[in-house]
Image (cartoon, rainbow, N blue to C red; front, side, top):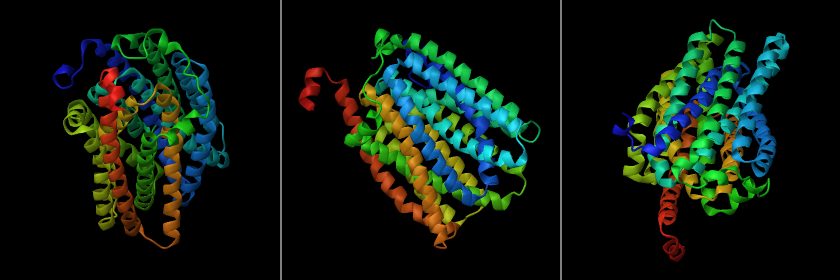
Length: 431
């Protein structure tokens, strides 16, 4: 049935199916926790958010070095399960801490939980895509990454739907334990994918996948900035994170003024998540692959910054709960359905070490650096006395710069992808 809408070859079917279960489990786990995290952030006050974002960046920097070390020393069939076991154990510890804490202690535990979930989200999803860009060629990525990402969307729908329906009736502790169990399903899926990867006839296959990547623990940082191509990927993600943080703060301020009940705030966040993921799923299943193949990587990447320009312009005119909800739904759906799968295609044309180390650094540290720049920029603009509408106007030129970067980056990826698919003697002449 899927082949009527997406070009899936017989040898790819099982790999895509296990990839679906893998990312379904990861995103279900995250979206069970995301509304709990967002409510904890709002409860601490909007002015406190920039400090939470600073803590998140610090945590990202601390975790990247041990992660790079195990990538250097262990094959992917070992370092990926270790990463997920670590995060599952952390979820159980947070559930226990919340269960036995008093009200004064729970404030600090919730702040730590906000930081930890923000770290968790980027790490576990980045590791998933690291594996996928290692398994699939650039041509396969254009065809299949949208379809694979649909598994993430289904997981997000289930996770956010559970929290939206249970937030007022069930203790967050039970939701957290369910999130930990889902990560263990992801570990099982990783094992199946490692055994099935030779079917794709794409390097690395067989024993090559079990060889440690090697290099140095600091290679992710140095290679991310030494390559002009990866530097522009970093800029793309940095500008995406800055604009996302501006929107997040706009949403937090409007929600805190619109809802006084904590349960209502959590339910609002979960409902927005649910709408985002329903819209995303429809696009991923039927349109993403076709859009990327028809319009190319450059235009597919440029869609999100163009939408961001329009959305912040509308928010400047109408800073209401309805406007921020519509903008969030459309922007996040465009990101998950089009921009995110296309962005992952960018890494299919880089060396294998960059797919794990540089990609991890860009997906986590660079992303959270953008969060931090955005958070303190919002604080500075508010200190200057700018209101919601004026802050929205500031984002428009940033998004215009992001659009230019996206178009250049997409054209460069297509050039590198065409060069990879050439016979070796022609690629050498081209280069």
